[in-house]
Image (cartoon, rainbow, N blue to C red):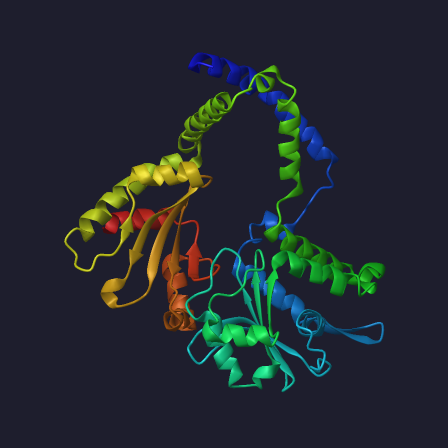
Length: 411
């Protein structure tokens, strides 16, 4: 096909029938059982700090129901230690405590620590959209090994896909050989909630007074599985489009690799052209000029500064990232002059008429200092931060257009 034939074919295949395709997808969507996950709707589903809070709050539940003690931390301990690691000799019947953000001797923080007197400890590290830091699990392990017999110390690395740890160093082989480590996917954690809690305790759904807890567990189970797996309606949309395409004359006419490659190239170029319109029709357009002037002043301010290790994008690169990723880290100011491993990041998103700013550090000592109440309150007062964000993002504020204007006038 020549270029004109390809364009005509594209119009007949897609543009002329796009409303029909959208209608087909809408109708198929109605046939699916609706998924109503609160954490996903509130955009918390992939944020590690909130996910860890959910897991911690669930595991620390310990109550009496139908005359028997229910302890979710014990259920999880049995699941990891006895079912997955096969250490049936470990006693899990004594009192179990659950701790969050446990500080180590190296000023690092263990996401969740489950411990039962001298019987066992489980280090649980939660990762979703980030990777292990240098020697992270090794430092956690060595810190806790000084508190308990190492043969009773277990490590759980919770990731999207159940990845093996990379930060245990020379301890990995030893721990793995003695079956005291379990890489766990969020999908598997969802299965644990389903099989080892929801199905185990029938009173959760049988008795009305437990329906709030039951609902929370269902939401949490679904969220854990969604972190790992695709949404079902995404597969459905692909099927609708595929079923529609294979019946068209244009699709049937693609009988050579060259025609297919040319068609794919055309669709890709068309998609890029259409995507490029996003900035012009989104709320972010009105902030581009303010951002441009601010960047010009920042570049001028840092022009003759020593040890300048800042990352300030051009407007062209910012727009490129917005078009392709719907998001741009427009300005990253690294406070190297003060010998601090600390950054202030100014971001802009395609679907917002506001900027947001984050304070970031991967240094444990700095993080501890910035979490101190006096420092935290001062930061909140200056920048009106909403609070801690996931991973190493210490603070984040989303609605800072007025702050941006003040910064612009100060520069």
